[in-house]
Image (cartoon, rainbow, N blue to C red; front, top):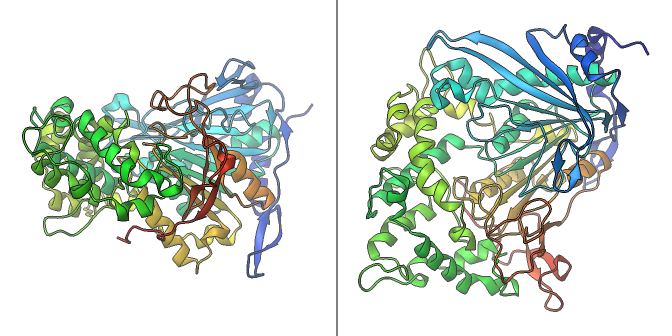
Length: 584
């Protein structure tokens, strides 16, 4: 059959994006748009032919287009269908600062049998590599956007790790691409590729990712509101520069009570050992576990727990030498403020508290608490975020972090100069993170999930975000946004938690069908789980334990009878002690 030419398809994208709405009403009877469902389609021609049809993309080089046979990739226990893998790069430039050549490299995976939707995958860390465009989220996911038939895009956000990791931060344009401009550059390119592949642009477009990918998602929701219909943000470090600085601040406190060499991760961990973290976790469970009606190893009512748990009182204080069964008075003095939130020298908070939760003993905690501030946050804060940047962070990360002047660096995160005209708090964060009214008015939806035991991005910061968008929308956040806290879960996955859930299906149902999500059932990944086993699932739990993840600020409570391992015996109720937290 004749193949559509790319320029003609491009002309129709703007019109297609503006169409497909039907009237709806909010809870007060006011008109709101409701976006119509996506319609399926099929690939036109072959994958080999697609590269030739993409030759006219401006500023873009297509480097390959090939067929991936059905079953080559498997997600959970589900073989992924046949699809095209298209690779390319765009926006190439030579840095006037370091002389390196930068470009935004990407891949798209386009199902032969398409569901009419596009998924922009936000990736983690400092990006720098094109990871497979699967659109996978959640712990050991059993499903993802590609498996569900979306066309999916993944990119390196404008730099490669081989170029020196965080050293790309020396180039102002590479900073901006990492922060937000790679998304702005790739969005029309991806939609053009979709149009060339299927003869029309996507009916509905979605954006999702976890960690830095969650940050990308909230930034896209604020900057590119008209381009996407649904957003799924996991553990969104939307104030990532402040969170990274807070982690370095915490490392300096740990260093003050470490018995080993604090410039090494094992040495820094001597400040708060695995046995001592277990002591704290057990103390939290002893005080808070039964608040939800069942002693089951999970704390559902996080806000109430923070009110009834007292770190000084409930955690045993050593009367003699540290022996793994207690914390010394000096440890409590150093560690307590890490939970209550990072501050400047004069006590002014600059990042949110971290709640006490059972996952403090989780296996992912040491990396974020003791390795990341020395090996990751050092380079990010020093070279990507500070103005002016520091190359000292590239040569000796531990020395940089442990000797960092926190107050001075906090000011440098907001600074600009003639070379770096956007500060880290401008290019890394949403322009107005607490105002999502443009998103609400066009009928788009946003869902967020966050582990309560996340040690790098505080769930309290995400709660603060939700309260902010609720205020700015006049108390209407529940019409377009949901936040799901995952008790026990660490950063994006893991921990003693029910961390496996499908958020994509309910997001699509909300965006395209108007069915607002309530509780979402999550599963523990015990022995035999097809999506991968979580070794931190306690042996006392059913390996297939399920729990409802409740929309914030409600919490799960046991009904009092029946199988405590089953989500059906739990219900979402208002937290008895409100939302908790504080606002900045």
